[in-house]
Structure formats: structure tokens, C-alpha cells
Image (cartoon, rainbow, N blue to C red; front, side, top):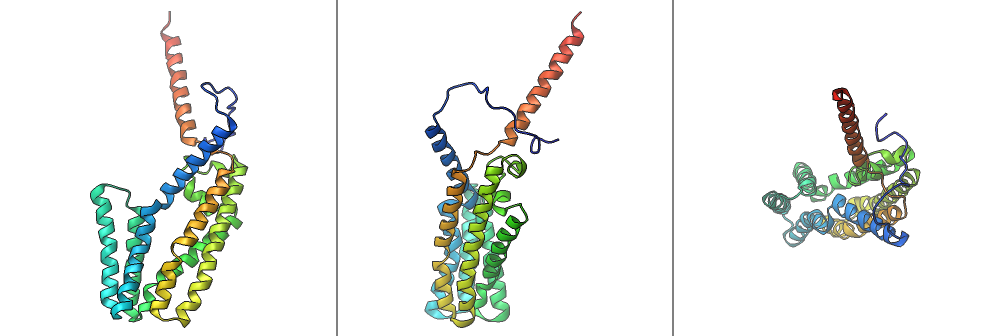
Length: 255
């Protein structure tokens, strides 16, 4: 039985300074806020998400040149990755932006339709929205799979922390419905609007729905039970096992 699956140990005998419920709640909220900030990239991650698309639609609005607009968007994405590499920062958000822009550039170049620059990202948003809904219906909410390692709880919330699982389910429903609502706006525009109209609406819808989903996730998790740190449990088990072995060895060498 792993530490992820086994019953929670008794924490009633904790030592050290006690905190009041209000202090504990503030601490839990601060930890949740910091973890969400890390998981979703923070302000810098949002800038890296918005900037390539904003550059594309701005240039295309001015000169209607698909090739120049696409190359400029891809170029700025590569620059953002290079900056992170030089600074030795986490590159996962910048890399995801590069791949998204690259798919859009290739697709638009193949079809010759500038609106197709946005289509891969729209399809990804649709698929992600459905994934949030379907995984929640299956009892394994996607937001829990994403944030579990960030909170050092892995999948312990599935069997050992029902209140937290419920919060992850609510958050996943929020993400799924928000993303599907966004798709309900964008896909009709893909067929009916021109490239610049679609582009500016898409840029406008980048940040507000994301912030709403992150805020709702924070609100649900801030009210949920704290995560079970399975890494700390495994480390404690290892230390206890070493102590037992040391005691056994000591017993053998005594006369």
C-alpha cells in the first residue's frame, strides 16, 4: 500500500507553535494562491500567451500580409523562449506558446486563409473544455491531475481527501464551461467574421475567461481541506525505516 492510498495518519499530536483558525486559513489561501500562480504562469505567462496573437492581428490589420504577420508572431514566440532560456526560467509556458503559434502558422500557410492561424488554438480550447467536463464526470477531474503535483499531494485527493476532490470537481466544471462558452463565441465568428474581427475578439477573450477560471479555482480550493503532502509522508516513512534498521543493528551488536 503506497502513501498515496493508505489512510491518513493522526495529526493530533503535532508539536510546535499553534496557529489560530484564521491564521491557518490565511496560510492555506496564500499557499493556494502561490501554487496557482506557479501552475498557470502568472502575469508573464499571460503576456507570453497573448503577445503572439496580438502581434499577428495587429500586423494583419495594417497590411493584410499573411506571411509577414505569421512570421512575426512565430518570431516573437521564439524570442520569449530564448529569453527564458537565457534567464534559466521555467520554459513550459513559453514552449507551449511556440508550439501553438507554429501550428497556426503552418495551418494558415497551407490553406492560404489567414483565419486558419487561429483554428488550431480554437480546436485545442474546445478539446480542453471537453476534457475538463469528461474527466470530472469520470471522477478524475482534470484540474486535480494538473494541480496535485504542484501541491505535493499527487492523487491522494481521490481517496483520502473527499472535500478536496469535490473542490477539484467544481473547479474543473468551471474551467470546462468557461472554455466551452468561449468556443461558442469564437466558432461562429470563424465562419461569419473576417480575419481581423475574429483576431481582435480572440485577443480580447484571452485573459478575462482565464482570470475568471483561475479565480473560481482559487475560491473553491481556498475553502477545501488542505492538501496531504505525500512527499513529506514518504520522507517520514523513510526516516522511520532507517531508524528501525539502526535500532535492529544496535540490538545485534550489543553483548
